[in-house]
Structures are given as structure tokens and as C-alpha cells.
Length: 372
Image (tube, rainbow, N blue to C red):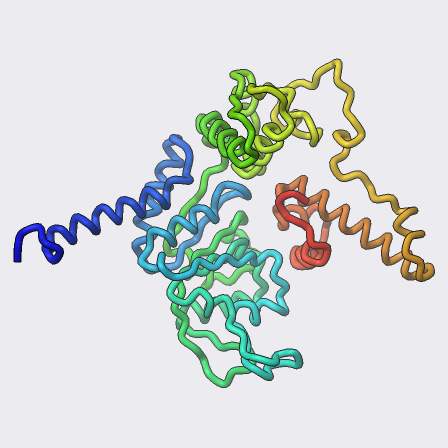
């Protein structure tokens, strides 16, 4: 065999090294920042990806937990199999078992055929459970069995099936506190908390805000097909002073709106007040004395026209009342989601209602959690 031929082990090793580096570069390319604490987390992702254990990703809403989970999957041996995300926060408890584990024909009235669940769909790959803190006690018990025994039982089946998935879970809640309050199983927490990553809040990495803002401006311009724009220095300073409770997702949304509505090549602080009305307060910039808020800017979610809702459609008092209640509920839920940057837990807390009940309202009215 000639040296350097197609079967040369050294050539194969070099090829694998190049492919491994390429995979790593692709998986980590979307992580923008130079903050030391942030880089420490990013540098641990390849190490976490190489292990078979469950992963628990912690961090506030909008810090990039799903991005982190996708990078772990892409860098793992499971990258050729599916990555299946599950939003536990909006999955009704009575449907959870069917969604995760599927069912066999005849399991219930409308089960006319066999249906594979998300665990089956993720075979060989990664199952990403976002907002895992919202799972009910029954759902936690079923997930614990999946982690402990690598088996699951579809609804109506008379046998267990083997599960070949890696579990990556994420939450913005303190699971330790929930365990202490008996709202989250301690044994499940310890099973999940083998490998742990904490995504830092944007206010804890302020030095990265200008870099992120410029990155989002470039992407927003390219996506909208507009000429390139730049951020004025006073704009960068304003953005860097903000606390950003919605973190990176909030910054990206604010940048996208500014790019869309701004005229000219330079984004100045005034551009971050147009259209939504709340951005200047978020960013801490003073309001202009010569600008009066428009009706749309004063309230991004004005109350529905209840009189019109009640009188349109007919059906008598009961039907009119139902329409008014539905219009109010949709407006109220959408407003809270916008206020809390899509966080169902915080929105439900302000609404003083059960988190799963609030999630059902979001699903019922087809509300986009990110934009209302």
C-alpha cells in the first residue's frame, strides 16, 4: 500500500480531524461574544457533547438555551439523527404522554392508526425538553422512567419499547427551589443534573452588547433586503446601558424593528422609539420633548372594540358574552406575553393563574409567544 493512499490510517486520521474541526466551527458559529464567562460556557459545549449523559441547561429567557442544545446535538455522535424540540410549557398535561410516547391503534376513540411519539421520532438523536419545570408530577414520573430504564410504553400498548435518545433539558426556573417546595421530583432533578451549563444573562456580559447589536443589524438588513446600516456611537452606548430582561432575543427583536422602520444608513436612539413605544424606556434613553406618542405607540395592545365584538355575529346574549370574553382573554394573554418576552411562567404569575391553564389559552388563541 502506498503511503498517502486512500486507506492510509494517517490520511484517515487527518480527514477526521478536519471534519471534527469543521463540525465544531459550524456548531459554535452562532455564538457571538467575547465575554470571559460566556466563552467559558461555549468552550465547555464540545466536552458536554462528547458525553452520553443527560444535560441540564439553565438561564433566563432569551439567553440562547435552545441554541446551546442544538450545538450539543450537532457536536455529538448523534448529529446524523433528529433533534426534536419539545416546548413543555404549552403541552397540555393530558396530551403529554401521547405526544411523547405515541399510541397504538385503538388506544382511545380517535386512535385509528399507530402513531409514533416524539421519543420515537428522535430515535438515535436528541430530545430537547424546554421549560422542563412546567411538567406535572405524572409527567415527571414518566420522564424519570425514560431516563432510568431507557424504555417507554405507548398509550394502549401491552409492552415497553426501548428508547434511544439523549435528553437535553432547559429551564429558567430554580429547580433546587422547586425540589425544596416539593414541586419537582428530587430523583428526576439529580438524573438531569449530571452535566450542567448556565447561560449568562445579557446584563452580565455588557461588553458583548455592541458586538451582538452589530451582528443583528447585519442579519436584519440581509433578511429584509435593505442596504447595510450602521449603529451610531450614542446608540451603542444606549443599548449597552439597558438591562434587557428578555436578553439576546429581546435585543434581536428591538434591532429588527429599528432596521425595518429607520430611514437612512445610520441607526440613532430615536429609531428605537418608533412603532412600539416601550423601547426607549427599556433602553434608558430620554424621550424627545418635541415628540408626542401616537395612539399606536401609547399602547401596543389596545383593548378590543368590545361593543363591536358583542354586536357582530348575532346569537343572543350568551353568544355575545362568549365573544367578548374570548376577545378580552386573547388581548390580555398577548399583552402579558409581550411584556414578559414570551415567558409563560412569568406571564401566568402576573395573571395569577395556573401555568398550564395559561399555556392552554396561548394555544387556544394561536398566539405567537415571541410577538404576541
